[in-house]
Length: 337
Image (cartoon, rainbow, N blue to C red):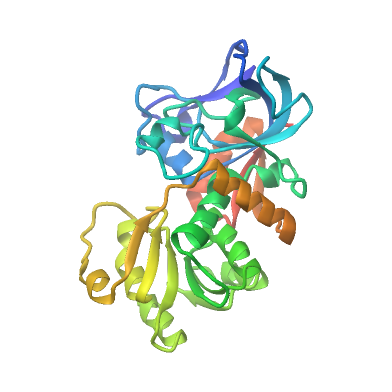
């Protein structure tokens, strides 16, 4: 079968299409024909050598996929051939507190990922595909969707009427916009593109700020919230934007750190957190239970994930290059028809 592996040190050019021999199933394993895979910034970091893969020197990248069950092991009880399934990011975190060393059980780095025609996973590393979503839409759920859900409603404890600040219009932010509006939250959203802001308004965003036109966007957030600040920020920038996000948060509010798109290693002043009684917490996707909650919510509310562009399996390098360009609104998906 065909798959992609990463040749270290070659960036996107190191995405090599290879033949992999299909291995036998263990008693609790499921063979899945992949039908769609979605890309995350983590996948780009891995390709560029910015993300650790442990001893897996040439991993199969990506973690988020949907497909059809081809074959099941003798002890599998939850699935049968023909079922439509979606992956979970962590292959051993079912529920409860995040286990120690959880990165070791995430697909697409230490464990081979799903950018392949077929994959074999433990049955506990899969969930039934949401009935209301097609393969491409379902493939956007495991990281972007679950991260947005966990940040909003577990770490952020958001309730109807709360105000949330979303940075940019990538996969997590657009998922969070859709979930927040379906849950009765007020959304402030930033972008450097007026065209993307217009698309965000069509999805229900209440307040829009072009951060290129308004570099001190945290002051504008405060102005638009009557000086109070937002209840919750989904911080995707990291060191490059974290100070501004904290400043835009109300006293007693929360900042969910979910990404580092704007940089690493810069200085951060903790005093505003201390003086404002604000809470900063790192969010690393979520458990299979979180994903199950999200999928039920998606089905109940009829949410359709936003896919910016789809690529064929032979166009994987082009798909990664498009993600790297930052021009997308929502998710980038690879089809394996």
